[in-house]
Length: 327
Image 1: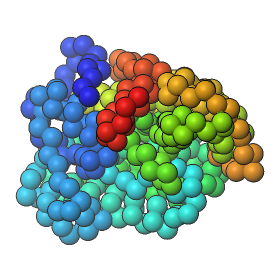
Image 2: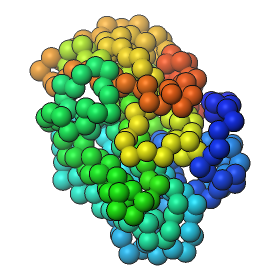
Image 3: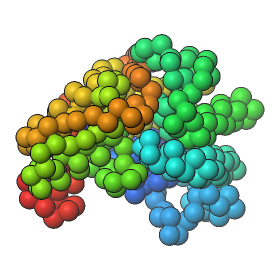
């Protein structure tokens, strides 16, 4: 399935990323990385990739050697161990250790190789559980984290501080961005490790296929979440590489949210599921609300292009194609 990619804002601003730049996309097979490869290629840049079977990014020595050999103009660090509430709660050691190893290897290796531009991608879960809404970038480290993803969040916070440290000590033009909840083609639909939106798509699809009278979902359905299509994120990432060179992280989102209950209803419509939705309130809700303040990114001229319902429908169609299924 092919879709038109969101276009970058058209303004005559000198770019910090030269035309036809060679950009190493760390994690190119994932949801974010694959979207970045599409976006960079569409914009006339060269995406450099290396699969995990050939390069384990946790291995600092091999990663540094690869970056010295390829000498990219820029690096986007999209590689990470990610997952939903269940995965984060079950494997906190892997979530903190794998991500710390990846970040230390890639950022240090890029600097040693003389890479001019680097974009580190964090997550909105870095912010305190009860941060002000919408969440400004200045809320970082002002309160306790959400316990269900604390290990992952701490690793990502370390990545932000690492990029800032390279800026301050060496003058490196390294930046960081904090995406909101992402979805789209390339998403993870695994039953145990997927995030909420692909998990809902799969649950409702399978319930419709089996004529199940009801679907039971975790929590109360009351938490509010913001969702950004991954192609919009990729457009924002290229924009940041071209136009942003600041110490502070930049939130990337839509500036709009909805409840998980409302999201479930929307996914039910897209998947044509007609049964009941029941809520298991004995299960955790996670953070009550995570809406990002995107004014810093908006000031650069960015506006998301993919409406949520359209994006869910595209993602559902992509997953069905992967499964060889029919609607």
